[in-house]
Image (cartoon, rainbow, N blue to C red):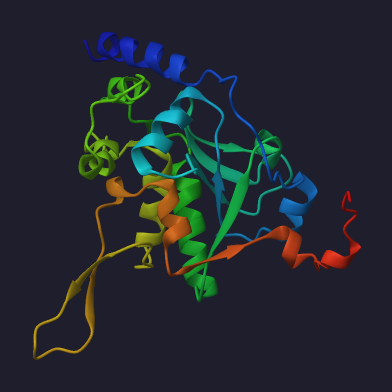
Length: 238
């Protein structure tokens, strides 16, 4: 029965993975420049061009619909990501050569901590994408999805509670939480007797790709600037 119940989810997953005709890239970074800039532990955000990308962008009010982890592997195997159909897999930067991307880099991780994060991601390869509620994502492709703004983020908490399954941001969040590295924690003001704020780490299933961009603990790295940008050398049309 479990196998039979997964069949509709797989069919919907294939539907959601279809490319759309409306995607327009604006600032695509060439793959060699990305490869030269990325460091192990970086999170690569992707502005996707698939139907599922449109749903995630709608729910998160963000241009970023996918997150992949840079492990530092050989060309063609640099990234670890959760794919809707194939689950957590190893893939290459060339898969996103035609899309807008952003590099988000954790700051201050020691070598040993970084190794733990990388090992966690490598150990997650083979886990399956959580298809339990994938039909929900399909609903948000309607012209006017009936979801109030304040509820949209929690609509992405699709996890079934099965640790063998993952969505793209969840598995990366889990890896950083393994070394207690914050991403975008909830901030609760302390009592009158305490000083400052208290940070509460949210459950990993509540993280979305844009959270790495918004995080005050991840630096945004732009390959064009890292390579020594000089606007005077640009050839601009009059």
